[in-house]
Length: 98
Image (cartoon, rainbow, N blue to C red; front, side, top):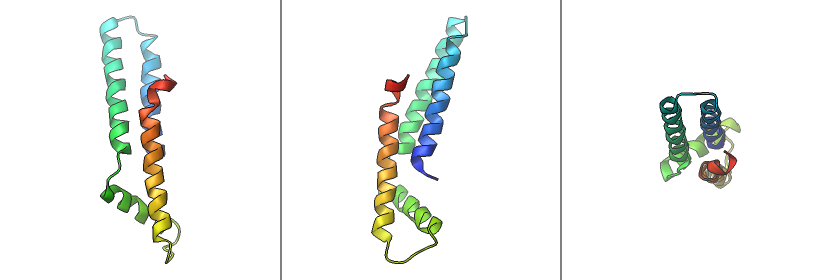
């Protein structure tokens, strides 16, 4: 699955929980929920971090999704790298949206 979609889902949960804190009268509960949103943001950032193994796995998934064509290895590798970069950018700038 596209890493950017995964990261976006985690960040959407964090944003949703942050909105819930506006409805909670107990400051301790609100603080705990805000702590959870920070953990979710850190999780999103960790999911977005690319290393060679993660890129290889995603490139193979893309290759399989496209019917296992030959001669397009670099294309799928670059697409996987781009997905990770976009996911990381999304995770890094998540605070700008909240």
